Amino acid sequence: MRLSHFYKAAHWDPGRVIAMVTIKHLGEFQFYQGPHVKQGIRFCYAGKDLGVSAWGMNVIELGPGCTTYPEHDHQNDGQEEVYVVLRGVAHLRAGELEQRLESGAFVRVGPTQKRTFFTDAEGEGATLLALGATPGKAYEVR
Image: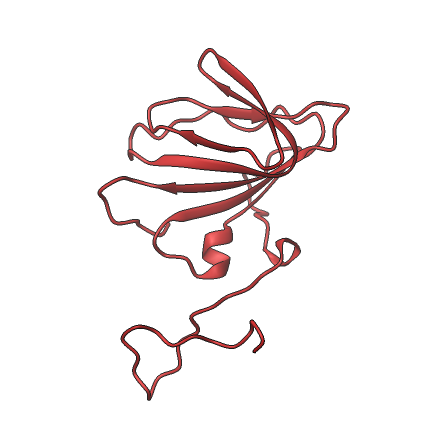
């Protein structure tokens, strides 16, 4: 069986075909090209590209020496985030904490904690997967 075949939904309607599996390679995602592009950062709404509607999921590529990733929190919407380093080395700055994160690292950041990421100038940069949702609240696709 090939992975491109589709699975049936739990409440399956035999008269309607629903794609239950979507497979994309990192290079197939559409990266943001709008007016808020930041130097050294490539950002894509990976969840939207895959059809995810239950949580937010983004891919963030930080080039070597990137220091322009915006510091932010989610105090207003209560969203907590998990970041996974897919490739390279990134540094997390969250309040007084500054932590080096290598490929394979998982980090949870609570909604009120300000955070930012940066990379070393002499490194290869880093690719992060960011997953986010608000506990106890249905996810709203933006």
